[in-house]
Structure formats: structure tokens, C-alpha cells
Image (cartoon, rainbow, N blue to C red):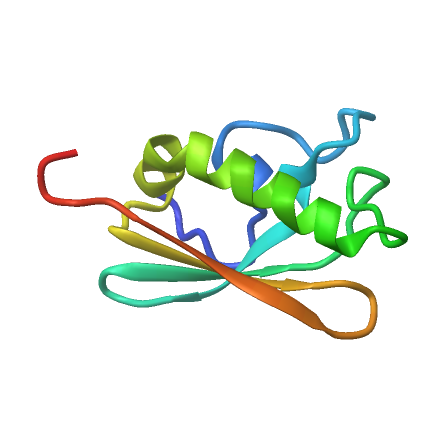
Length: 103
């Protein structure tokens, strides 16, 4: 597995940043990798991250992350992923996804 540090979640899941499409998964970028976890900083990347309605964007991101949790944890080869969500000025909130031994 390649080192995920600096990659976006979209790239880790097999996407390309230059595909010309808006995608909320282009915003999370790996900023730290530990033995059992990876931390992503989530900042605006394209128009899928609505700065006028950061709460809606946060909710959308949370839904997508929880829906795709198995693929995300497999892509980072870790049991836990932390997402620190920021708009263009401040911290909005955090999201944690984790997989158990049986998944």
C-alpha cells in the first residue's frame, strides 16, 4: 500500500482530482497517519463544499463518510479515521469512523 499522507480521500478511493467533477471526497486530505488511525483535514476544495451553508456541507460529508466507511478504512489500511472539518475561516466539527474486528 502506498503512503496515504498528503492524498485526498477521493484519490485513495481511486478517483482523480482533475476529472472536472465536483466531489465532496476531494476535500478530505490525510494530514497524519498513526499505527491504527489516520487523520484528515477537510477544507473547501470545489463547489461541492458550500461555504454559504457549512452545516449542510458537514451533514452531507458525514452521511457520505458513514455510508462508505468500509471502503475508506480499507483504503487507508487503518481501523479509525478522524476528520477535522473546516470552512475557509474556522473549525466546524469532527467526524470519526471506526471499524471493528469483525468487519
